[in-house]
Length: 179
Ligand SMILES: [Zn+2]
Image 1: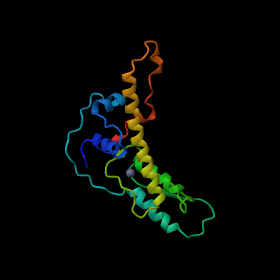
Image 2: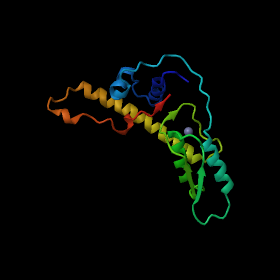
Image 3: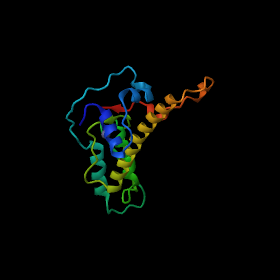
Image 4: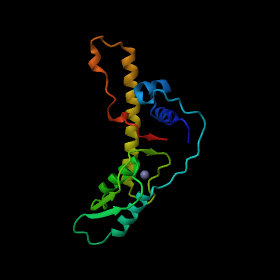
């Protein structure tokens, strides 16, 4: 996997045939990156693994599968750490998947970060996997849209009285990347 996550964004841009972006453009759209240096080139090895809460969730759902279930089944997953953002979303999608919709998974808490090497359980439902792919695509689209908007707003000088019209970077400016 590339050390510089800009390469991941630009590989996706190539796939969509949209313009690539530079680190400066990304920084301009995401001011929280200001003062940080662009990650170095080269590759890094990432060990992909299924986080334990997802493994337990799939195991429990398979165990409860076929049992008489008059109402929702609450399954508390007791792990020592708070779950990452990808696990949070995966568990949400899992509970929306057919056959798993009676399952109510409860974890210790969420810490909201994205960890490299996150992997979906290979034996989970296909629609939860598709929902994860859609979610990540949507996040990448949002990054490129924010950068494009910022580039456009630079090409057309703003009205001096238009200070209130600063585009808001919204919720996605949260520092959730941990790669
Ligand atoms: Zn996780």
